[in-house]
Length: 87
Image (cartoon, rainbow, N blue to C red; front, side, top):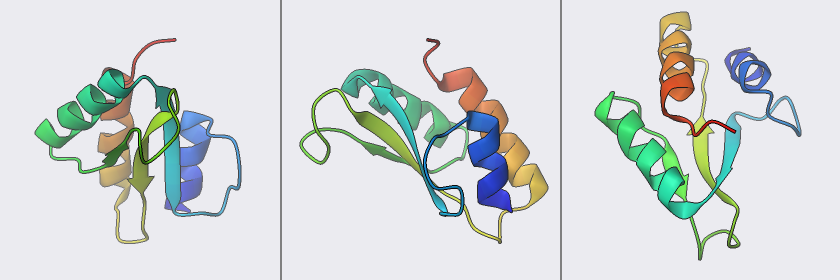
């Protein structure tokens, strides 16, 4: 339920039942900045860039579990709205 809520809010394509949610940003610097800003807000997500993924496909790797509360999900979605590059 939590992962579905986040996927829906972020309009992430792909399987809807997985608890790991990739948020494609593309550019390495923007991805690392977003990851650092989230960490400063107390939200830990992976920031993945080359050589782990191909050039131009840097992404945040968000892991959601049943242990996350509705407030946790609200905090995550609000923070992502603030830190994700606009496109």
